[in-house]
Amino acid sequence: MRTITDAKALSAMANPFRSRMMDALKVDGPSTASGLAARTGQAVGSASHHLKVLSEAGLVEEAPELAKDRRERWWRLVDPGTRWSRADFASDTAAVTAAYAAEALIVQRQFERVQEWNANAATVPEWDDAAFATQNWLRLSPSELREFSGELIDVLLRWSHRDTPDDGVERESVFVFARGFPAQP
Image (cartoon, rainbow, N blue to C red; front, side):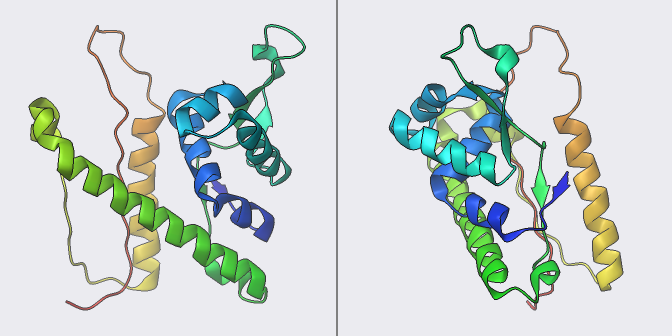
C-alpha cells in the first residue's frame, strides 16, 4: 500500500477516467491503452493521454516485457493500492484541494456502484445471497481508529493478494469498501 505524499499524484487520481483506468488495472492486471480505452469507454488517444499523466505522477509504469513488438505498450500499476491523509498536506492548499477532489470522486463512485448493484441484484440471485452491507457505531480514540483501520486494511490486502485456488470455481471481481470517521447518529 503506497502512501501518497505529493499533490501531483492526488491531482492525477482526481480525474474520473484515470480513476477508472487504475481500477481496471487493479482488477484485470496490465493492459494496453487500447484495452483500457475499450474497458472505460473512451478514445484510445484519450486513454494514452491519461496513462501519460498517471505515469508522470508515479502511479502507473510501462510493462515492456509484455509487449509482442516494439509498437505495443503495456501498462501496470506501480503499487497495489494507495492511501493518503489530508493532514500530510496541511501546509499546501493546492494539495489539500486535490485530496478533497480525489476523495469526493471515490465516494461518488462508491455510491454509484452501490446504486448499480441495488438495481441489478435480483438478476444474479447467487450473488445477491452472498453480498453484504454493514454499518457499526464504535467508540474509539483517534489512535484506536488508526489501529482498527490498519487491521481492516490488512484483512482486505490478505484476501486481494491470496493465491486464487485452481478449483474450477468461477470467480467475479468483488468491490468492498469501508469508511470510518467520527459522526453522530
